[in-house]
Image (cartoon, rainbow, N blue to C red; front, side, top):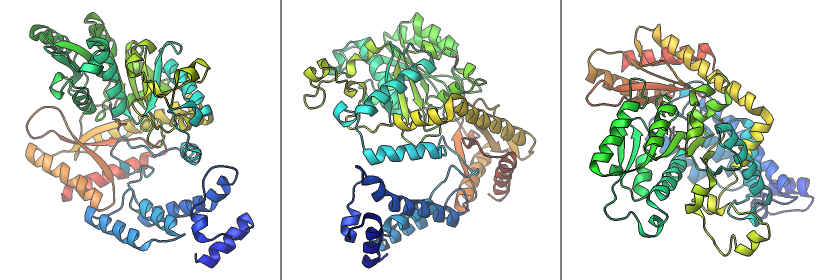
Length: 501
Ligand SMILES: *Cc1c(COP(=O)(O)O)cnc(C)c1O
């Protein structure tokens, strides 16, 4: 649109002539905000539709260098009022779109339209959760939602404490931080790990890598994390956990935390929570349960029993941008007892002065590692009100059923080999080749082949252990609307790519 056209549009909308520069500098808030947003949102929606149509599949076809060149060209060309629409079209064309049934590699969910619309409200108003006077209603809303989620995991809502996080990585860091400070004393914040203390964090071999990162960041050291062996389904072996505690005893080391995983990233395996909780309790050790993936099962009547024992955790990680269909970020950290949260408390004179708190102004500052923070609670609260817990549970069940269907297709396809029965919504398998090294090469190459062709986005992982023959493919099925025929055509594409790789 040229400058003349923009002026005419502005006249039609606002009545007064407005230069393109002035129009581009309009704000999203206030009573005029919605009208400033409307034509821009229209541009974005048109760009999303056109980009998806041009892509026509689960991922942009071609090599990374070609995608990078297209981005450079678009950035060089797009200028002025239409740039937003042009760049949106490029972003959509160049996407890996989890709403496409053939995009099923990661815990990368297709967000619900209602959650995205709710997030638009958050972006427009831009509340920040670090002080009440930046987010009056959003502060109260986060507290209400956290009480609801505490009850969902089986904590006492009046005793628990928590916060919305960027995801499992941040939540795991927080869990281990509280564990460290409970075990080694509050002084550790000021002075670091006392000399002579050898901390241990016990997590399974299949635990998320963010556990090691958290240990490094917290000064415990990555080597403090001991990988407890898993069974074939990648669940922590409780006998091996008992051995790890015994070994820490002989070494004079201090077990700071046990991390159980409720839904491993790769297979969805759930560690035996009661057995792990029994051992943690016997050794007086903090239990953090990483339910970043499996937490979604709490909404499903059928799958919730898998997480039995979650209420025995001292702290829990949940991620609603996985099995919760929220746009990222929508992580949650919960501690069973608010008093254990003390080590995060901070007084910032410009954010939560004591006299404001005494006067009844609440502050969430001491709940988070972050300062400026989006109200990510809002989209989840809105989703829960629109769909209800049962509505979300039905989506979880559909994805679970799809995993069972895909596993059945793999089982009856001679070229494919299933690793184990799905637990949540993940199917781990491979294109079967007898020679282990050739199997690894072929499975890795077939996946890149599908990416280059823009035909499918399939995950790749490796089973724990050593040596060749451990490469596996995985489908992480998070699209509740995917049909059995679409699953069959996805697996057919894998077989075809395997023959040609
Ligand atoms: C995804 C995942 C994480 C990391 O969460 P982010 O939201 O990506 O930070 C941690 N643990 C498990 C089990 C996960 O699946």
